Image 1 (cartoon, helix red, strand yellow):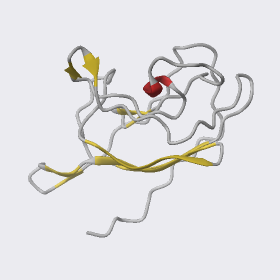
Image 2 (tube, rainbow, N blue to C red; image 1 turned 90 degrees about the vertical axis):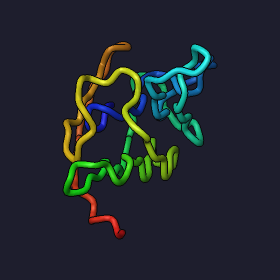
Image 3 (cartoon, helix red, strand yellow; image 1 turned 30 degrees about the horizontal axis):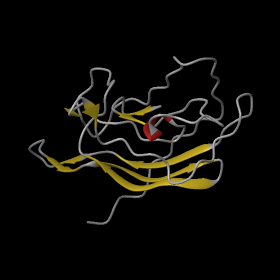
Image 4 (cartoon, rainbow, N blue to C red; image 1 turned 30 degrees about the vertical axis):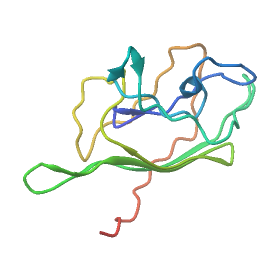
Length: 139
């Protein structure tokens, strides 16, 4: 799932798998496009594994703050995953994103961008998607 087409949280069947990279598991925040020593950096594994087996519905709640810009269009605050729950378990909290991650879809950082759903690693279905604005953040 790409919030604003730029900041990806992994949604795929990692239940019971021993993964070679923790940022490949369900609920991980995907790494940045930049590399250090031929390895991607900036990916963040979930604090706990709470994915369910394939064939069961997953429940994902995301509180997200888009990057903020001043009147001149200069970024004054990074995008941020405030809180992420997977199947009722807290898996991410207060994660700033300096910029887009690998695999972005041609968007630049902005106050408003699309939500993009991806289904390229097997069968996937989505239901009950709600988008609600957050209260303004205090300065």
